[in-house]
Each structure stands twice: as structure tokens, then as C-alpha cells.
Image 1 (cartoon, rainbow, N blue to C red):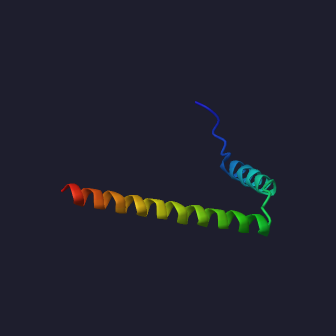
Image 2: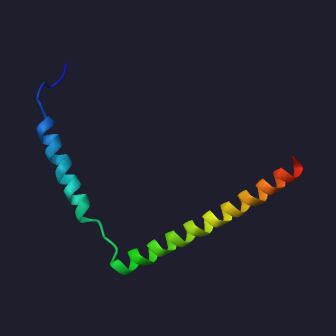
Amino acid sequence: MGDTVNNEGTQKKNFFQGLKTEFKKIVWPDQETVTKQTIAVLAVSIALGLIIAILDLIIKFGLSFIL
């Protein structure tokens, strides 16, 4: 029905060579950029947490007032 040649070994070799080539293209950020982005993520997470907590308290008091 087709070729019975086993190409599994060459496929794996080509895959890992391609993977190695792609990893060489990665440009890693410097420490200053990582620090700034980490601080930004923490600040936004804390701000959103506070907003959600305040909304939760408002809804809780509103429901307890109604019920």
C-alpha cells in the first residue's frame, strides 16, 4: 500500500534539530524589563483584588439590607 521504510528516527532527529533552531531565535528580556513587568503584574493583581473585595462587600451589605 505504500513504502514500508521506517522514517521514525529521522523524523525525531529533524524535530529536535528544528526545536534547537527555534530556541536559538528566542530573545530573553533583561533583568530590568522582568522587574518592571513583575511589579506591574503585582500592582494590577492587588488593585483588582481590592476592587473585587469592595464590590463583594457592597453586594453583601445590599443583599443583607434587602433580605
